[in-house]
Amino acid sequence: MENVQKTQTMTAGEAVVDGLIRNGIDTLFCLPGVQNDLFFDALHARTDEIRPIHTRHEQAVAYMALGAAQATGKPSAFCVVPGPGFLNASAALATAYSTSSKVVALLGQINLAAIDQGYGLLHEVRDQIGILRTMTKWAERIESPGDAARLTQEAFRQLGEGRPRPVGLECPMDVWGRKGPIAMPGGPAEEQVLPVDTDKVEEAAKLLGTAKKPMIVVGGGAQDASVEVRRIAEMLEAPVCGFCMGRGVLDSRHHLSITMPTGHRLWKDVDVVLGVGTRMQPHQQVWGTDKKLKIIRIDLSQEEMDRITKPEVGIVGDAAAALIALAEALPKHNTARASRKNELDEARAKTMKMLAPLVPQLAYIDAIRNALPEDGVFVDELTQVSYISRHAMPVYNPRSFIASGYQGTLGWGYAAGLGVKVARPNAPVLSINGDGGFMFNVQEMATAVRHGINLVAVVFNDGAFGNVQRIQKLRYGNRTIASDLTNPDFGKLADSFGVASLRATSPRALQDHLEEAFRMDAPVLIEAPVGEMPDPWSSVLKLPKVRGQVPLQG
Image (cartoon, rainbow, N blue to C red; front, side, top):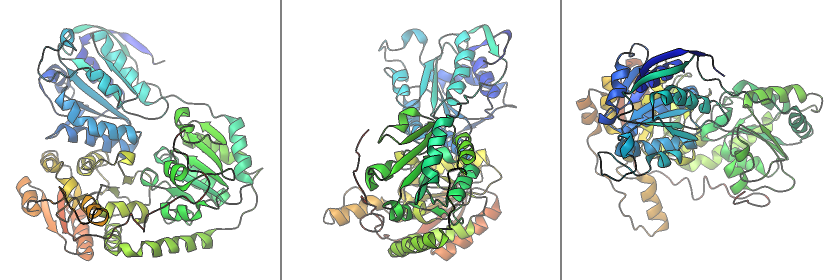
């Protein structure tokens, strides 16, 4: 337990601010309002230690916190008013849950005595704490000054225990300013360190050491175990397959790094698969499993371990620690292995041939990769180029491909990109968007200018919710409905916000403009007019069952 200092007299708001700072929060993404006035008054005295960044919409507040958390792997925090403010932020909070991100949600509330009484007070929502608990791993209400320090510390302790998920605190408006004696923790919340089950590591080592065609599948839980993943992969000559949250765990230039289409091509012959920090949902539920496939999983959550199929070996714990132990146990079981470079090069070549019909998307991906510096960060979106980037864009470093996970939240990207840039100000950060998704948070260009957030963004403009419209055309007899868009002049719009604007009419022009934009060190918007792009789903990226049974639920 953390050392406890002597009791201090302060307000609940002061105690929460102190708890944020004690636990390493140096930026608070926020949008103030009357229910949180006393909290922000407490924050005002500590702005030399914690920087408030306010946005133009609560949705962006939470997305910025999410982007910051994903870019660093560290806790991030946001604060909004109750009711509509919280509900505006809820899509981002659900996305934080789906991506296992360490986000602290601070919500205001109406007066304590009035909660759930149905009086119809400003911003009142029935059972707000219950709604909050559906989107977090832990959430509580602060009802007294004494609660403030204790529950804030507990929120951060929860972030460091088990699978990372967002946590939540709500505080009634009349509690923020209440003063009382508070026992203040002497340091930050301690993170849980799970012991590595050496017996299970030994079982895993035996299976992997005798495997003929092993594969490693990585997800977001492997992002901070990149070195360890590479070591195991090289010991086994095992290809490493990452999708969305797992991109960048192994440098795409490494001969063992493969994307999902290549992994699918190899899946039927895999005899042992090691899943690290991943649900392996498409692999198990779509590609299929059978008795010949032995599954080993490393995950922080026992619940996740058994959700789809029960693995042969399940190791609950930190990915890096478990892999270090595995690397120590593996040599005595492992066989001499020839390089699989030629085999994997051939498989990758077949994948690129399969992707050839997607030339328009691939050309833009090449332009982006050529222009984005090696230490750059790419923030994806639900747009045509981004869909293919998950399968074809080379990614060089951990936490350099930021994605919305299974939530697939349209409109998240620009605001999340702002949060990434705040958290990693020295890295070039690129947000790519479609015209549909970009307009969800277009107003946050004002936030970029106000706070000097030098994010470079691209808007691929096809005048439609492109994916929706193409599906309507291909599957529903060209009966398009509610998918066409009327857009502003994006260049003039950016100029009106004080954001530098450029226009790229070809992949080559986009590359040139991106290189120019990264040199500007300013908020930049690049519009890229595009036509309808080829369909990636019906044939090119259709990755069907290739073996055994297809479990639908655990």
